[in-house]
Amino acid sequence: MNLPRLAIESFLLFSGIFLALLLEGYIEDNQIRERQERLIGELFLDLEETISDINNDISNNGEFLRQTKIAIDAVNNPTGRIDPENAFEAIQQVCKSYAFVVPKVSTFESIKSLGLDLVDDDLLRTEITDFYELSLFRISTAEARFYDFSMQECWPYVSENFAWSDPLEQTTRQVNFGAESTQMDWLSDARVKAADLDELLQDSSFKFILHEAFIRRSFQLLHYERGLVNAEALKNRLTDYLR
Image 1 (cartoon, helix red, strand yellow):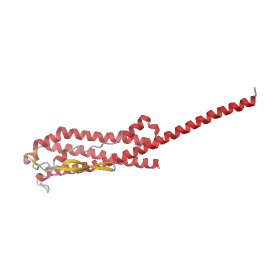
Image 2: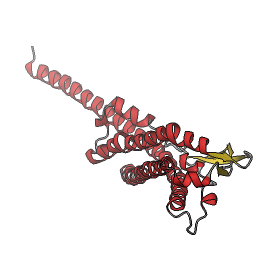
Image 3: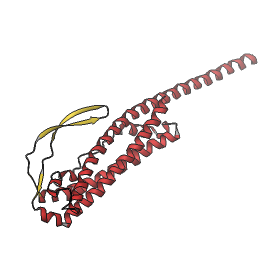
Image 4: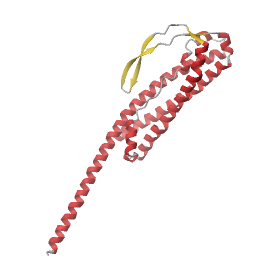
């Protein structure tokens, strides 16, 4: 047997195998990189929609909190500059809890199912996890606490102690879904009137309702605002990563 020829053939064989493995690894790395960039791009779009949702709920929650402050001021100073009867006309806003952040989490769940190590930037991976598993959890918990209070205590009290003085009027409401917006059927806030204003102003249960509404809504607004800061920071990180 020709040893030099055997050595050359062995070298070519192993070289071919080695090159094939390198090529396979290169193709696999490219596929992982492409999948990672695609998912990060989709996550960016999901995050934009979630940010829009949070901004919308901050606006709504802020208006309802403002109405709660007016009611508290009227109770604390019944002879002050705010007439209690007028202050309570929109008291139903104190109980409203229809504004919920509905984040898009499908892309994050896809990344989790593939393994968070798919995101090779350690800091970015941490920020993604913190937002989707901590910030959104805190928001949903604050929303749930207010919703439970609203359904179990606030609305029952308002329904028992106030009467709608105006008819219910149909209207429309603009709803934002990320960059898209649509109109949905809605109802305008009808004015309400206290069944017994003097008794209401002395009712400790009414003060409790206002106290709880203010505290719980304040916490809800706090988590919205903190979540928005985290979402904006994550969006900037994703922008830098995708460049």
